[in-house]
Image 1 (cartoon, rainbow, N blue to C red):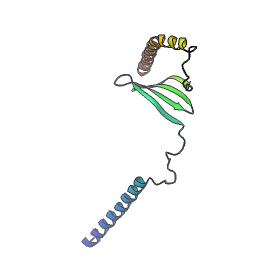
Image 2 (image 1 turned 120 degrees about the horizontal axis):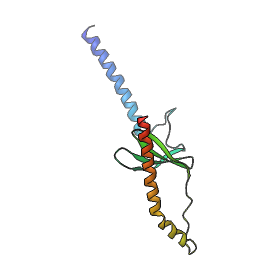
Image 3 (image 1 turned 135 degrees about the vertical axis):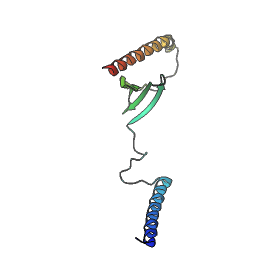
Image 4 (image 1 turned 180 degrees about the vertical axis):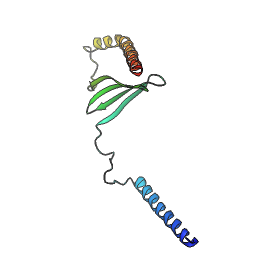
Amino acid sequence: MDTLSLLRTIGALGLLLGCLAGALWAVRRYDLKLPGRVTAGSRKRVELVERLTLDAKRSVALIRRDGAEHLILLAPEGHLVVETAIVKAGAETEVTPATQPQEAATNDNLSDIRHSFGQLVEQARGRLTTRGRG
């Protein structure tokens, strides 16, 4: 193979790679819709509502799917579904004298809920640890 033929081959390869890079830039720059590409305009069925880090390795994720929410514990040992089919709460209501005692009871139970959640997380950690050993 002579030098001219080698230069021609390298030049053709460079031109081809340049055309591919230009096409990729155009698709990203102008957000062109290509066949088979999932677009952001379509209705999403699954979305991450919130994620809370428990420690360096574990976190809790609240995921919404078709209007129902699911609470999942994520850890290096695997995942654990803590609660499923949580129905999203309705719109907030206006505070009236009839609803004030209910809100006071809710505030009183807040510490109980936090304690229960802590116990639930510890229980889930125990399950994940026993799964890792077995």
